[in-house]
Image (cartoon, rainbow, N blue to C red; front, top):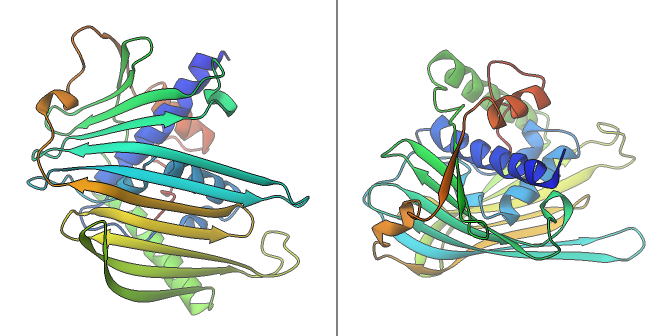
Length: 296
């Protein structure tokens, strides 16, 4: 598999997952609890990648209209290895939402892993347009745009109810076992907006995943009811390190309409759900539904 295809699948998978989560819930997002849904090491890795790519604010919620804003999301991750070595990553994402609920994310990622195509940082633009029912990934370096399918947009009715019921049942089971605790942190002002905080403490008992001792993961989730988006989150996991996500420079004026359209000099390619959506479903051994969403 060449690097471009691999890179496209990674970005497309994350983009579709994020868009799917936004359509899967009609209320304010639940606190991030990836480890309740994916008990193995994949949970921390998936959650970290989503936050580093600036998708924390897309972990749930309905399409928000009438509340335009722009902001800069700063995601940072630090990890200490067994030999004392340190790994630090930082990603800055520009966010834009208009009064119609259209969303734009401008992301620049370091040249590591499958995204290392030229040894230079890579920039992408994600556009989610619920008005037109379209999603695009723009590649500014090549002036190309991939129009993405929406394989999860039809999730509703029994499937949606079953997914919600499974998540709630899992939470209740973990609480009853004493492995999950929720704390209301009250409200505080973050970047000029009021946010409601929740702390989640999740304990993985000794032996559950081959661990000699219990593992404690602590996450905080700060949600602005005014903006209807996450403005800050923190997660500390001894297996994967610490991750923070913070919105900065929040502006409440409406962004320019041109930001939510593909530039006229870009070449558009069609990418239906058969490529990215089916890849994600096969990867998870599923054929008719998305996996339980990480970060919820």
